[in-house]
Image (cartoon, rainbow, N blue to C red; front, side):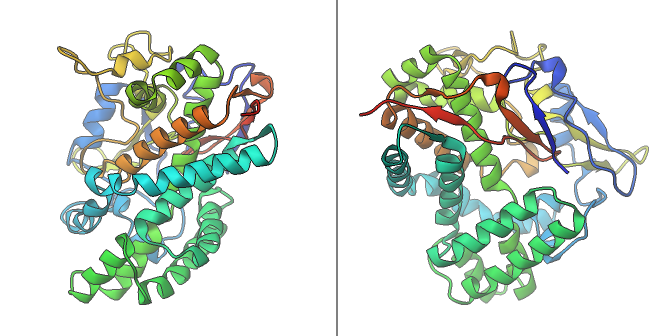
Amino acid sequence: MPVRRGSGGRAFLAREELAGPARLPDGPGPVPRLIGGYEESRRMLTAPAWSRAGAVHRVPVGPATAMSVTDMDPPHHTRVRALLNGSFSARAVRAHRPGLEQRARDLVARMREAGGAGDVLEAFCRPFAFAAHCDVLGVPEAVRPALRHWSVARTAGAGAAVTHRAELRLHDLVRPVLDRPGPGLLGALADACAAGRLTRRELTGLSASLFFDGHVLAAAQLANALLCLVLVPSRLDRLREHTPALVGPVVEEALRCHPAITLSMVRTATTGPAVSAAAVIPLANRDPRVFADPDRFDPDRFEVGPGRSPRRHLSFGRGPHHCPGAELTRLQLRIGLAALVHGLPGLRLAVDEATLTWSVSPAVRTLDALPVRWTGA
């Protein structure tokens, strides 16, 4: 179950407070060791001696979990991941920019029509992230509401039985889409099945697994990034004035300093003692041995220039299991932030930051709501 908690008077936690919410639920097998150092986390994420497939599942394994690329080791992982890489590449994702920019403008316009205040997480971040996800996958509009419902239900942490049932419903919902595939990743996977590169069971399981939590994390991350800006209006004003140049560094620093992901996937050592481990991503991203003044939100640390080589954060993982949707998430954040700061003049937090609450699970740390106000155009 997610832990619902307030911020203790501040919207974001300092580094020494971040480990508290990062607790794994009770389940079979030993409790994994939590790793908080940057280099230690990076080594664990990239070393072949740490197996993802060997980790103990804490929920019943359905057909989609069995085909989730995050739960595989090479060579099975290599074969399946190759089927996804083309649709999630930077070049392929950039082709969706015009459509995503229009979606962002439409959502902002609806917010303005509804008045001068609203919950930007519910009105913009969540629908925008899911729409972006479905656009890349090629999901027909008619089936999107049901897929979103069961995808959120699976991620909500309501217990193993509910999680398993939601996974099975996702599996059922993708079947008719795959029977009449269109453009997008699902169509490409259907073609791969027709060419004998996937079995039908692998096809439906893999397709259903693509709705697990990517869009949930993207929506939460977009809200986190916006909160970083509205808490310090000068940051927001600076981004509005210099959007093309600054939006990239703002996105990367929000991913580093305030990631939506809580823990990496659990991995089990294949050599030596039989131990499991997970990286506490917010801690690793704020390791003072790697990032100077790590609790400070400072987009300048990610500016690229002569002689500069910024250290990368670990919010998308590292190594073979580097998040396949990383470039899509980056594009969503850049487009979403630009649309909000330009489309909602005078944007500001509508409540005291001490009243903001969060839902925290091993997978995601998300605001429950992000109430904001803005002035008329």
